[in-house]
Length: 407
Image (cartoon, rainbow, N blue to C red):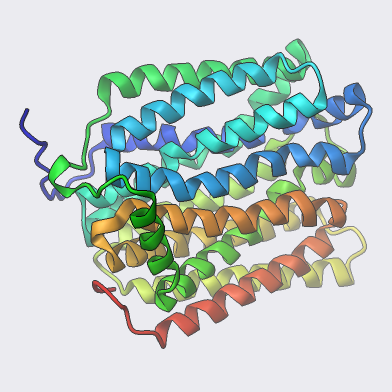
């Protein structure tokens, strides 16, 4: 059997972008769809708000850890096989969540969901880097992000209506359907972009050394931490969504769109702008703009909550929008730069980057967010600290020489 030939292309293939975006959408759907059901789950299992928030932590921690596995596995076994197995196991885990007899069982099956849901997202980044370089990769990454960004806006609204008509278990049956449908589509349409001649041996020691080498590259570490800290700045708002919507803003289970629409609008505009500027502007300047925008948005949130007792919801939504916009200016640039450091280990690079990003996000959503109780002033202060840390990491990265490749 002949190996696939990967050619550099200049046009963005919308079909492939849509498929990769759908794979990336599994994670936001797995997180956001059941947000409107969290209070009902809390009542049914007779647990505290902090306990029910651990359905996010139970998902995110395995998600982060397994991101270190999915990428290296795809380097050794190929992209397609890892994605298909991930989707199959995710579907089974979602079905188990839907019929979970206890909260402990639900947490267990949520962990299995997390272990498998990230295969498409992590491997998808490697697929983009397999096919494209430089500005073309940035454009495709931006197109995928535009499509992917619709998920967090749609998911809680869909989840709210499913919860009203079918309870929280219906939400997990819905996720089961999504997993099964994507498995079928990927089985039919997903190409293999990592030929056998470029694969590394499936040896735990070798893969571990590769991961350690990537982590020991200070330029990679600073860049990855930059995007992870800034991403966490917006994930704080998402992790606090139930408290913000139901308590602070006193809205209903079907009105989560009021928080998620600003996030998605920021992601969409940032992705479109980043794609348009790819190849026409200095990526580092775009990255700096995104970092400063998130910092200024957080400062605005702090000022609003200091001088105005109950700031208008529209101004709070503007803060969230600008925070998300800044994140999307930074993420594609950082991803392309870290991939260029180790072109022979793109799957492993994507895995380590995802691990750092998700580990920090899981801590913010599962531990920090419940402690802030939906207080938008506290959230803005925390976001400011995260965004300022991201800027510091970006400045540190400029003083480091790349150990491999070019950036």
